[in-house]
Each structure stands twice: as structure tokens, then as C-alpha cells.
Image: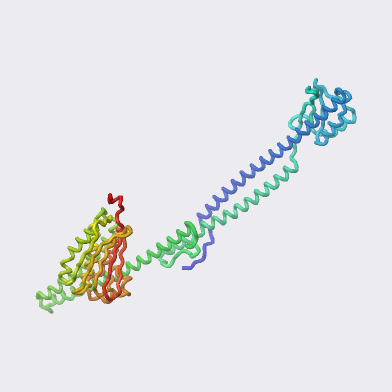
Length: 461
């Protein structure tokens, strides 16, 4: 059935969307904060390294000036001041005793201008010792003032925040897309299941959903397969009900008519009349018994008592049990069973299945025909074949041979309810095997049962 694709996310989709967005936003926030902190610390560390290098260079220049003048008095401090100025810092110099070193007025003024607004204490000040010939002769201090946000840091933060906003938008878009991809097929499948439960037996998943890869596609295909099985089961149940009604109606109508004739005195209740009514009651009982047998076979998988058995011996025993019927019908029965072929089976149920195949052969073979019952083993399977030289099965009837209550057009006059072979199929399937039939429609039929053999470890070989 074709239906419009679902456009809403549904409750599950909204929950998935909220979960995806929350995870994405949390990740973006954590990464943004980490990036901002890392950038700030990285830039600060780089700036500190530059200030330390400037202080060391200034101390080296002050040492040269000290050495050239033989002391702080008369030392040319223009070089250190220039280096500090290039670093954007004011300069203060102390001698070894901790007293300020006097500088010419012009140089002092220049240093003051460079250091204006900058403190020489705290993180903004960097100190370095002045060493001449291995002796500490003084200290220089560059005043950078309180650190301020640099242009590089501002640019980095701007890009990080922009990337965080873009990441959030992309995360939301992807969350919306993924949530829709997951939830929309489920919404459509839920609608199809509700429609199917409401009685629309044509409700199925969309082709795009059933062909999707992964678990969603598998779920859609499983729903379609289940819906098909339900439809087939309902059709089979309706057909079976009609067939059962037909099978029961004939003997009941005959019984009713015969009894009414006896009641009204229209016929004499002689032995022939009583025998005819008894035959109809026997037929009615046989149909009811066959139906009970089929029901029991369908539930056999729940009640099997499986043990390793020699299927050859079981088949030979079934042949011995059926031989009187074959002899009475004038049909030859031969048995060729390979020894020591073990299967894990319920002996009674499997005996019933083989017995039904032999009973079917007796029913449809003609006097003078022959039946061969054979057991072989090959590739881990036990093969049981029942081959006859009877009239065969029409090609049109072959696909329906194992259906309940099925009897071909050529078989309408034969006795039986059409249940025996359906019982065989159910019993063999309950043992994990399969049954099939082959016939050219003129020279007999061959029924083949395949059952898994017992593993060598189980046999104890």
C-alpha cells in the first residue's frame, strides 16, 4: 500500500533530537572553554618569554655600560634604556646595595616616558641581575605594567567563538537529520502496523524503508514478512474452515436423510440401510479424527521426545505394520534401509509420518503396482523415499499435495480427507527436516523426506 511519507519526528525523534543537541552543545561548550583557556595561557606564556628575554638583554647592555665606565658612576645607560623602550617598558636600575643608579636627566626622562603608566611591581615587572666578571653588580627592572589583552588574543578568541557558533549550528542540523533518518521510518512503520491491526491487510512498509540498510530495513522487512504470514494464515484458516464444513456436511447430510427416512417409515430398517448409515458415521468420525491428528502434528514441535534412533529400523517396522494393507490391496511393498543411520527424533511421531506416506501409497496405487521404501544417508542427511508405480500426480496438483484437506480433481472419488500428507509435512518440519514430492503425472510418484543425522560426537563413533 502506498502512503505519504511521514514528515514528523514523533516522540522518539524529538527525544533523539534533544539528546543529540544536548551532547553536541555540551561538547562544543567544553571545547570552546578549553580553547579559550589554552589560547590565553599560550599567549601569556609567549609574552612572558618575550619580557624575560628583553630583561636579560637589558641586563647584558647594562653590564657592558658598567664595565666600560668601571662602575655605575658615569655609565652610559642609553643602550639599556633603548632596549627596554623597544620592548615597550620603563627601566629602573639598582646597584648591588639596592640603591637606585643615577642616570643623566635626558636618559632618565626617556625611561620615565617609556614607563609612564606602567608599574614596576607585580606581574607587569620583570627583573634581571647585572653580572660583570661573575659578580652581581646590580639589578635592572623592566616595568610593563598590568598585562592587557593582546590583539592576537582578541583575534583568536573571536575566531574560536565564531567556530563555536558554527559548530552548534552544524550539530543541530546533523542532529535533526539523524533523528529524522532514525525516527521517520519508525513513525511510518508504526502507522502501517496500526492500520494492519485495524483491519487493513494491505498495509506494508514503504519500499524505501524495507530496502534501507541496517536494523531499520531489517525491521521493515520483518514487519512485511509477518504481515504476509498473517494474511496467508487467515486465508488458510478460512479455506480450512470451508473445507472442514464441506467434509462434514456430506456425511452429516447423508446421516440426517437416512434417519429421517427411518423415522418417517419411508424405508425398512434392514441391515443394508443400517450399514449405510454406519458407514457415514464412520466417515464422519474419520474426518474428525484426521483433524485432531493434524492439530496434534502442528503442535508436535512442543511435545517431541527426541532421542537418537536408527531410522532404518524404524522404517522397516513401519513397513511390517503396513504390509497387511498392501497385501490386501494387491500391491507389492519392498524395503531397502541402510543400517546405522541415526537421527534425533521422536520414534512414535516419525513412525506416524512414514505410516501416513505408506497409507497414501496404498490408497492411490492400483492392484499390481509396487512401492519401494528406501533409507539412505548422504552429506549429513538421512533420506527416506517412498516410490510407487501408481498413476502419478498431475503437475497442477503437485504444489498442493501437502496442503490441508487438498485432494486433486482426479482424487475426488477416493476415500480420505486430504489430511494425511499435511500431517507428514508438519511432523517432518517439527524434526527440522523437509518433505517433497516428484511425479511425471503418469508413471508413479516419489515422496522424499530429509532429516538431519546425529553428529558423530552424539553417536559416540
